[in-house]
Length: 331
Figure 1 (cartoon, helix red, strand yellow):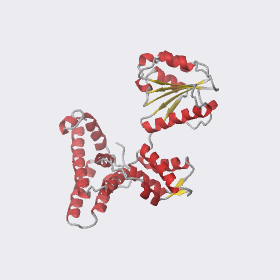
Figure 2 (tube, one colour):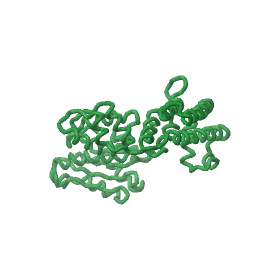
Figure 3 (cartoon, helix red, strand yellow):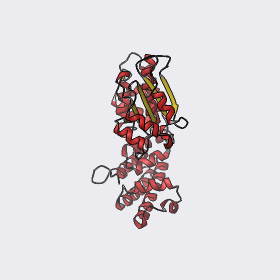
Figure 4 (tube, helix red, strand yellow):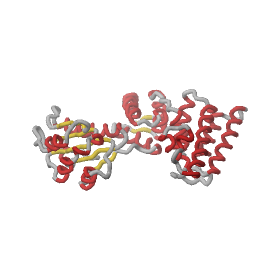
């Protein structure tokens, strides 16, 4: 939502997405626009979708502004509003008040609901999807640019690696970096090293990226874990166990589908579903090759034939990048 002036806002929006930080940032920008026009926020009403009735939302939206030209009516957690409270809002969407900006914010709405369909017809949808791993450095550069500074590409990538790619953490670190460089225009990699505290990702972040054949994510997580003291041999052992699980999952799925996979492997249902999805990204010969290469990498590490971290990274690339050099499959 690139609107900068209150009068240019649409009468209604559904702001949705799974990333809480991005949703909060979007709502904060909207509120700041109204706060700049009237610090008392007399023309701002905020409701919780878990508690408010649809009729109350519509009544607030139909109220004329008191101090300025527009009112802001914000309903948080719209995804948690009972469907029985939707009808008054559905009717309102068809003929919204021109003097109000009604914002429904939450993780999302079921696309088969009347409310979602009405909002879609009105062109009121604004999705805030978290950037993909390969897009995070660009996200950092944009966030820094909005603060009137620049950041070198390798510095942006170092910030992503140090924070594990968490948007909220990166935003907080960018504020610190801007203050640290003072009058300088550009944030450099040395600044990131001096200011940013490295966040150690959990090991499952590495394993999930490996299963998704996300080479950049797997390498970044592995490097952060090794910097924090995790041994390359320990990471390889965990990764080898995951590869064996993928072999079992692929065999079970091909034998009779994914039903019962989690039970067979002693996992929770969501873990079983994730494993089945990841197994579909590999051909059987690729999984067999990954296990053979893991045994060879383990032998190299134990006999000190080469840098253990580099051995692990080469193995990760072998697993994630298909032998023909094409992009990893999505199953």
